[in-house]
Image (cartoon, rainbow, N blue to C red):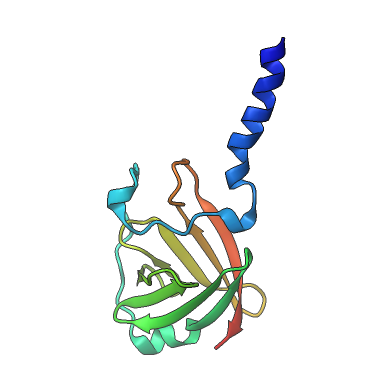
Length: 140
């Protein structure tokens, strides 16, 4: 009976590292550090000009406190979250962009004023999960 009482605090301590919103891992963009299974073929990238991606460029205030800066690039965008290294995303539609490995997907021009964005990504932790968060334009 005593081992049962000891097992409960141990379980709580093991679950604590992923408890806070700020403790979420950044998006994984390196396919060598993450094992994934992809059931469907990734969508084909479409050609977009830098002029077409200019309306979505700017700084976004993420729902978890991160700040993401988006700027146009050849055939897509470059997104940088806080001080992490930049991610290159290819256009798969006029408002949807994703990394080559499919681990990060961003959809722009959402919401009533079309200023919102939704990002889903596979975290770098060893969990089989996809994190989805929203963002509002902070500045253009």
